[in-house]
Image 1 (tube, helix red, strand yellow):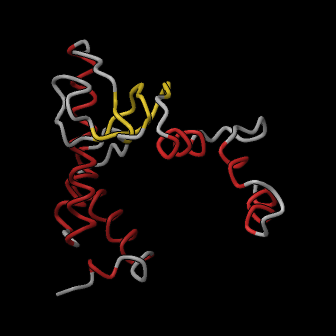
Image 2 (cartoon, one colour):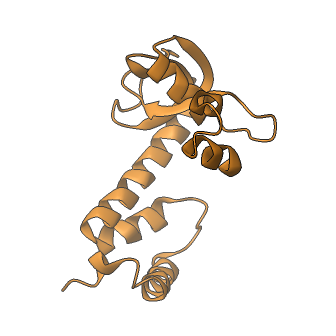
Length: 151
């Protein structure tokens, strides 16, 4: 793909050939961009979009993976309706955890980061262990997370 991009940049091949699928690459992005730029409606089996009502009972602002149509208007998720209550509950839990992660990252909020660790059933830590793990992670990645070093 890189070589095809270089060839297109050198105008050795038609750049529109970059919008076709490649059997070695399972990336739908070029096809989706082609549908949007080309103004043709194209069904996509699974894309990540802002919910905006695609899945009832989940927040409209949450990012969900749903079937969609790409076209000149952009990419729009298809309405899936309601999910079984148990699945909605699991998704809501993950959305709450990710919301805390984003809050922590954007604002350097240590408490939000700790809450996200405590909420996540995968981390399976008590408060003391979670706090120690957070301290270790923030120390190890301090250069990449300067927002947490503010007084």
